[in-house]
Image (tube, rainbow, N blue to C red; front, side, top):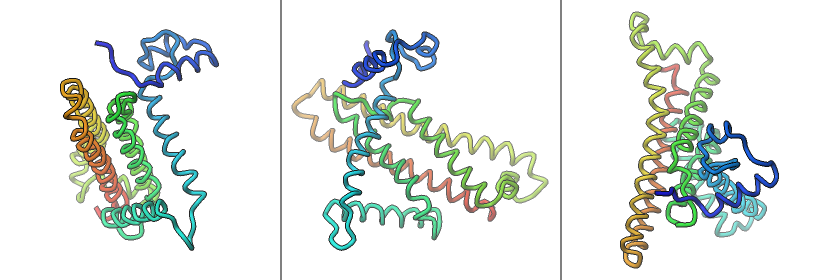
Length: 249
């Protein structure tokens, strides 16, 4: 069975071929492409579309911001941002809300919008592809470790991997390393499994009951999209809390 692709997959790649020529066979093998000469997999095209759509909404909105007379859209954004800032401070710690807001908000918006793509037949959710979810989980992994090193210093940050007693270090260090690396796998597979499964199930129900199921399924899809984005950022914030508090371990 041919794998479904978005409506932009072929046009974008044909445009790139016209501009850059055909891609090499080795490049196509590395990128997992099966169409001759193509440059970008569909999940990359969809990830780019997420960025373009978010920018198309936020950039014009940012130009209409007003302190004296905020509009309804601005008030909604302010409510969301203040709520997320409070959530970050509750999970990570006081004073970290503004610091981690851009990263956490960026993750949340990208994942939510990417998940929502699964509700429309002409696009594909980039988060239903392991390459995208692993890219997100690796990004979160690198970010919280960099934060931990910057806040505590390299020696103090690495010290918490050894456990509370030096005698336990030979046992604790491998366990901690495996535990941290497992977070990449956990974040990526949880997001991929839920969105891929939901997208597949929705597609099957749409085919079987095209006039009955779509609306309830879309409601569940929106809720599932929000829930998976929320779980991802909550786990990321928990990892950040552990990183900034490494000195206390």
